[in-house]
Length: 142
Image 1 (cartoon, rainbow, N blue to C red):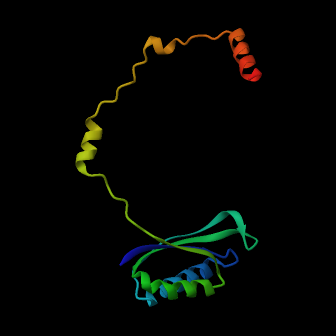
Image 2: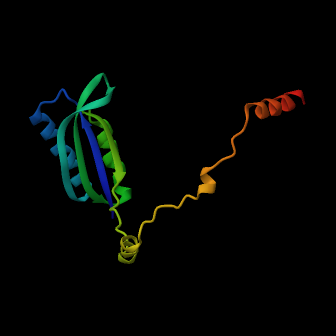
Image 3: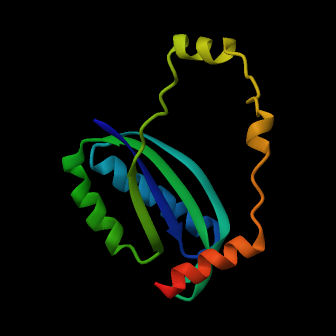
């Protein structure tokens, strides 16, 4: 079983109640495919960065669930058939791994030192304009 995240953009033409029923319908589609642990994250109306089907706003919804990869094909087909869904995306949701304790300890104990800049590296040889012109003439004459 893998963890998945389903992102939905629902049509802004829907009312709050219709968006809620559409989300519940999508949750039931996920549960019908025998996926488990459905969790709904948000149901907010957002402004889109670009228009989708001439619409600049949409309801943003996220569902977290676990499923076998083979059982996702029927869910994808049903999502494509829904007219109230402007866009949807199905992503694997891998948890963030924490750093081992020994690495955290090393980072905490290591002192941070500023790099030492020697005076010889600060001073650079100044080049005269005549020298640059002579070099350019040599290059161009070749």
